[in-house]
Amino acid sequence: MTGQKRSESPESCDADIGAGLLEANMGPSSSLAHLYRGEIHRMKFWRERLDRTSNWAITLMAAILTWAFSSRTNPHYIVLLAIVTVSIFLLIEARRYRAYDIWRSRVRMLQQNVFAVGLHESSGVVDEEWRQKLSEDYRMPKMKVSLEEALAHRLRRVYAPLFLVLLAAWMFHLTAYASGGEWPQSAAVAWVPGGVVLATVVAFYAAILVVAYRPREWHINGEILPSDVTGWDYSRE
Image (cartoon, rainbow, N blue to C red; front, side, top):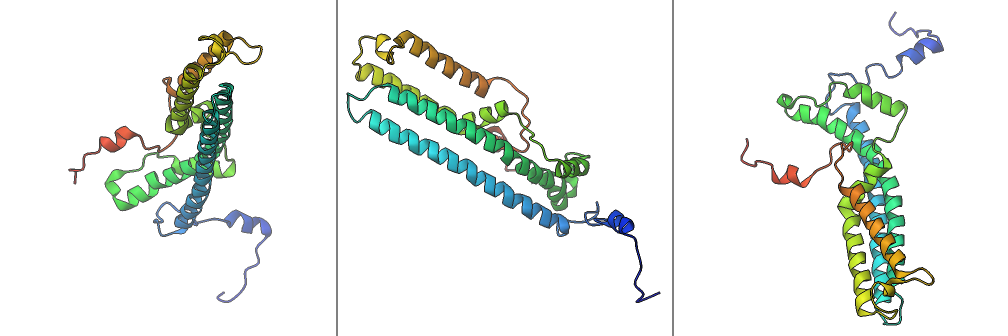
C-alpha cells in the first residue's frame, strides 16, 4: 500500500545495501565518478609524497657535495656518506611507491575500462574481469608490485642519475684532491684499505645496475613509457 512503511528485518536490509549502486549500464556521471574522484585524490597525495622524498634526496646530496669540495682537506668519504644517504631515501621512496601504486592502479583500471569505453565504444574494455578485481581490491587491498620492482622504477626515473653524479664526484675527489697516496690507496677509509673500499663501491653500483636494468615482467599498470609517446601516430583520426 502506498505510504505504508514496510517492516523489514536487519538481515534483509543488509542484503540490499549497495544494490544497484554501480550497475554495469551506469555511465561516468554515476556514483562511479565519485569513486574515481576519491581515488584521484589519494593518488595525488601519494604522488606528492614521492616528490617530497626525491626533493630531499637531491637537496641533501647537493649540500654534502658542496661541503666536500669546499676545501682540499675535507675527506673523500663524505661523498660516500652521500651515497649511503641517497640509498636510504631510495628505500623510503620505493616503499612509498608501492603504496602509491595501489591508488594509481585503481585509477588506471577505471580509466581503461569505464571512461575510455564511455568516450568511444569501439575501444572496448581492457580487462573483462575488472569489476571483480576492483571489488576484491577494495575488500582486501594489497601491494601489486614487489619492493625490487619499485626500486627498479625509482632508479630508472630518478635515482640512477643521482648515483652516477655521486660516483663521478667521488672519483674526481680521489684523483684531484688525493692526500692519502696513489690510487687506489687514496680510497682508504680509516683502517679499511683502499682496495676494499673500491671493491665495495663497485659491488654496490653493480647491484643497483642489475636491479634497475635486468629484464623483467613489469606489474606496474598504466605507466607511460617514452616509446609509448614517441611511437604515437598523430595523423590517425
